[in-house]
Length: 389
Image (cartoon, rainbow, N blue to C red; front, side, top):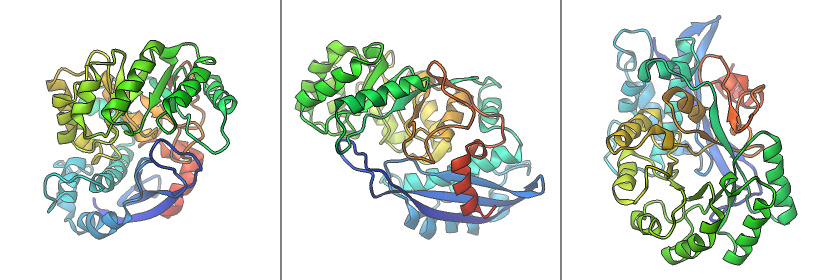
């Protein structure tokens, strides 16, 4: 058993939306295909992976460092001890050979992209959905049959007025979501409050709305917004300051009682641990948004979950960023609190399997081997071109 080829292609994410920091008109993502010599139903098993939105395609890192390391490794160093499958943990160690600690940067995205493809291949080789494989290996076989998902939208867009924002949020509710999210911080507070109140006019309550700053605020602005937002009793107030400014997060908690969320731009167990140690996050109400596709993959994500357990956090407080099927499988297989979703945004990467609509804020997963990309037709059309199927 061996990996015979790894292919990578940068794919544009063309969108005219923006958040408080960036627009997505020039954003890209890396797609990788890990080709094995294992055959199922007369075809080679190919594992697919891609990086989440918000980080550019790490093509250079993949092509110059990580893919060559994987292809140069001896087959026995990539296979489980019983010889029946690839070993994601051994492969992770191969990928990180020669890498110094710290300075996680974009290399965590490159490794996370490959790690996704490896897990897809592993589950396909076992002919099981990834969520089932994870539950059997790490959760005594217990699978969540459905996963909470919320609709992330409310982006700034040229010409988008309050009526268009309301129509967008009503559309998400019509699709079956019970919680929606909107961007704030890209306009002055008074204007953002008008946007928030417009959305509150069309959703059931403040608990149906989350807001996301994308790390834009300094402490004074964060507190100013907190005082204005608290009466709305929102689902959460997200990534208010720079993701590495743990003191800002800790101080903000003294001014804001309702739930907060952060973590999507922390890319290692060590950074996640620093958030828990020093960020003042509250395990009874706050949410953690670490995204395995950006943070060295599922191998590292499981280290994060182990760390959280030692600090008294339940995996149910984890609702990953990214809106992709990999995090959905992790949520169902390892018992997380849910997953982000981008209805109609960042396609074909966002969204879930065909024929699995959101109902009352929850979605089910397909019973197909691997992560389930093959059950999402527009995504699979892209992936199989890159994989050469």
